[in-house]
Length: 430
Image (cartoon, rainbow, N blue to C red; front, side, top):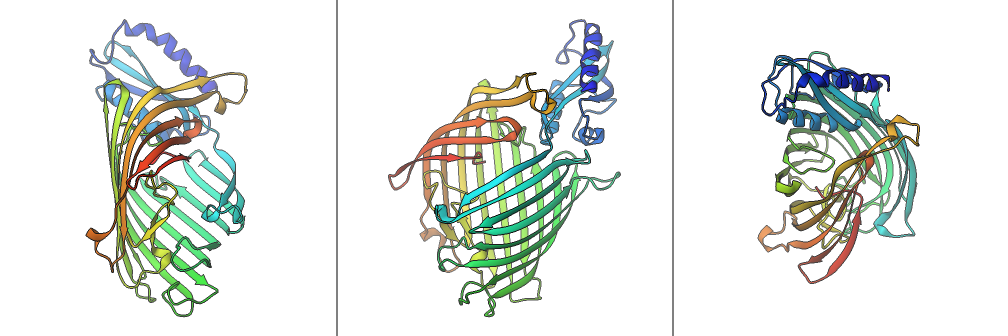
């Protein structure tokens, strides 16, 4: 808090030195960069997201881009970048308003959307452990599904290189997602470790190794690959990611390209599956702050027998609006989305001093109207893709941008078989 007031004072003192000059019509050379408001976050976490460096010529585009990059850390409610100049030398002030980082949260859900199959639990997360943007998660569940899960992420484990590390461990007893083999329970152990390297501000490469156990108590020929009802195998994957989105919580401009390939089973078991996945998104902003977003995503598997726990779906993590509540299953999947986003209330800040907690005094919110169309198909290797039905829908709705990066969409859609539906989702589709 002291740093924030100090920054405001500095800006006030030096603003008169600008003499009406604007970065758009003047040539300013960056002399130094100072960060304020980061009572918890280490300064280097903020500076590593900036393209602006001492000695650079300052542009408004660079200011806007770096403000977005810092906000995309997910650590701050608000980010401001101000500057003052003496002649043509400029001092940059980065002013952040930190979020509340240690968050407990409840878990409640209905398996298969059946009120008789309730699972519930509790979780805690720390999104900025040690002030280094390290993230720790612990959650556990009871009821119809039971689990305990622990994960850790560190975006920069060395001083000299942008090396990323994460690991996770999950032990669970959950019922199957697949609807083609009856209802049954899986006992699982998952362990995974990932190392990654960031190249510049927008590119990263990741490699992962893991170990999985899938066991069913009631033997069925098709529920596991092994006739014993227990599959245990190693996994390995590589992913490339290019991400220039202006705001990852709600994007209106920029590109995302994520490409990955993974192998389940490395010769130590009967498991032998390779899967390639992609997620491509492009957003075009235009006059009036509206935006058009286009997305295509796909996942394709080949190799040995594909058990039901390696199937993919519409109706869980990916959905087709118009068939929002329909669960569709296959071994491979393609999805296409297009959306026009029109602002009703451009993102802005509610600022108050009644609650004497700094992390809740500056809260971002906004409201957009969206018109969309979705389409997708799934198929298995014994099917011909061209003969499989496509599921599609068109519709419109509202996107509510809430503090701390929460989004809610509520809308109506009309699908390709003439059925309409109303839906609510606690995130945007892409």
